[in-house]
Image (cartoon, rainbow, N blue to C red; front, side):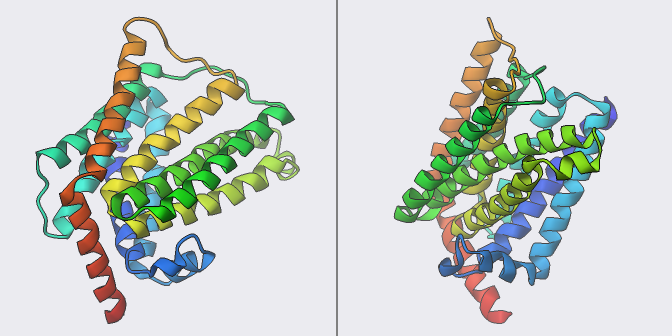
Length: 297
């Protein structure tokens, strides 16, 4: 259990620093590149961004190690601690100080999400789902993305980054479900996985999710994008798991109260951060630093 805890916290730190490096690199790119494959092409040439991706890969390694020694109900809430590292590091990078409002928002999202995940503890379920179920999942995800992105273009600053991150989190949550289906196919051999459409949908979802994440990082401060990403991805994955794959959630008194209270804390934290003048100022400084770094490169 000690290995699971330490590996989970190590994954959280790597995710935090990796996200910070990716956001720093993405903020240097012009708005015209948002949602375009050209954004990923430009970022791939940036050593700082590649270091960030490398840390994310290392984080997944720590996460796998943690899951080998501890249950998901322990590991996932601990990994959410990345927010406690990422937001203060982002403020430190831009030489700004977080106030009570910003600390409350950060801790509310981290604690609320950890509480909701730990109390709900999805379990069971089946590996297979019918074609209609998959069509509903993919259709709902596509509809959410198609609604969120036009709204994001009408907004600015932290709110724009958060709405884009909402779309990214929905895609990555669906990607997690596709990954589970692909892994299940691999149990029957590589050919079974290659013959399944889920494998190719997984690749497309991974690329689309990466593009949306980098676009969210480009459009606002890390506090506005990472918090929404961390909240949306597991919520979508758990929702699909229960609705489509028959996973069960722990319910009843007082479990459901903790779950609902956790989700309410998450929403309150996100709203508090997005409406914070300090976080808005972080976006301004990030854009200025990105412009200077882009000109210097």
